[in-house]
Image 1 (cartoon, rainbow, N blue to C red):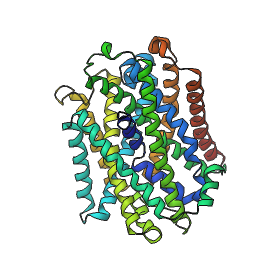
Image 2 (cartoon, rainbow, N blue to C red):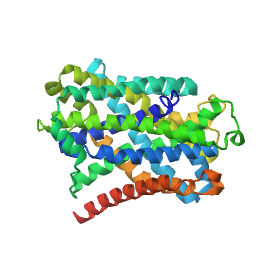
Image 3 (cartoon, one colour):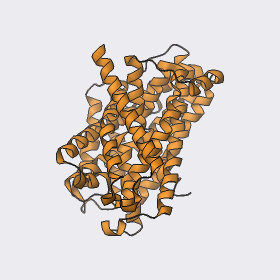
Length: 413
């Protein structure tokens, strides 16, 4: 149980990064209570994809892209890798911008100084912190997400409308609704949580003294059950936060006619008249806390992917001089994410665009995960059973359908 409050919590909290916060906040502001049904719909899909990713790392003793490097065509590996890296950098950049905007509400400093300070802090944390230290700090930062629950309750929502919006789906096949559905799916099923969960399982085995792939290979039924509970706990936490963010903005911004948001920090400002300064401050604190959690997960995750695809040494358990390419990649991706904020890109547009990018990069990666976790050459006797296969392939179908629906809506209009 203590482990579940650790690994699952980090993955779940990282899934509710600033980009996701912006996407969910925009969903609530634009569609009100009628979008709340997306949270319970997404929960089983979130559990399926993250569990399968963690299972792959647990059984093989390797990260996701290490397995992909040997089991998939080079061209496919390259395409998936490029999509994941672009999505990670854009989303990390949006998160850095979101943190800077939220900090700007609390600290009277120039925006450029806050951007550089936030980026430097995140980079130092990743390079000089050990895996165990980073994991434990991320656990604490995850608690900042509870601020969203409090701010939603302070907004005094219409509970009858909340119940109807949660249990009775309202779906319109227009571009605005389909765009938001793809953005929500992309934000809740982002590719970076796939790779992070698989690599985290590997790092846990390394921390336990299993240094070689041979030592790490294999998993007992008890370990797989523990991993499943780990994921269920983390995704329940993540999904509840998603729900309360949409609820907070539906009860305030949508009701007051404020349907457009220019930045994640705008949500905190807009909440003040309806929910009070304290709720607004809690929302800003949530953005800062989860941003400091999510940026290392994204940039380190991208570094894992690149180095594993290249066959280079990776791991936060290694020192910088032991994995030079890995730490160099972390530095490049973190700085690139910061630079995006100096290009004059609208933060809110970047947040939603990042979710859409993740929504399109996720489907092919999900297909590969499903294929690999059903191959005995890779998984031995730990191949997927019927229930997880139904859930996994069902999730894959929903992701593809949402992405194709958005494409068709653009072609038709």
